[in-house]
Length: 311
Image (tube, rainbow, N blue to C red):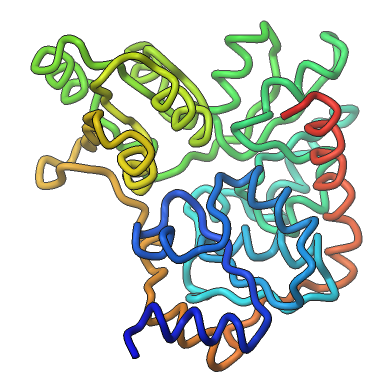
């Protein structure tokens, strides 16, 4: 029995469902029951019937699934799959920041720990951040954390003046403006697709700025045949799968030894670890119930607003 057959058999035996983020390796995406960005995975997790969820992504995604499904078993192939952005915003530090800025509505990006979500009024993803911010009156004082690039982008497109936490994603911070400009010269017809977690100089080069899912949809629906993609390179697997007749070029980071930009944490997910966690029932994600009780409110608020807005 090969590895994929073993995983499918174990999944059936355990009555489990496999969720995978677009940034994990393509072989895991191919075997998953559902793939998506952070918003889609949260929406899917909230309505699943299976008693066991395997979340192939990073640990804050596992936390979100467990918070939404406290009665289910949530497994991660590798508990060490963290997130540099979430790590840049510790709950104690964020709580002090909030206390230093009283009277603000607190909006947190989903790339945060359960402890930070517990301090938050509403959670957002890159798919819905702008729209959720715009549901608040223009004069509402807002704290936005932890991604300063996403927050700056939302401020720019909405005319808001949110107070930003100074955090960033190590993958999206590293894209090279100069190298993308060179790629544009080499491929003059290519459209540049950029995630809003990137720096402003990179966003300025974009033909389309959007979440992972939005960039995928743009590529699928566009009549263009060539794209330069400035987000984690795992998304190219689904882009190529959905558009076999199109060319997708990963935007490189500043490090000249790399041709594409990978999240080392996402790549900790492997088929072997997926098989092992299904077989052994570990590592299992657990969240302190007192934290989960507070964190579920802003997550549910995000899901409710997203549904109301048709996102």
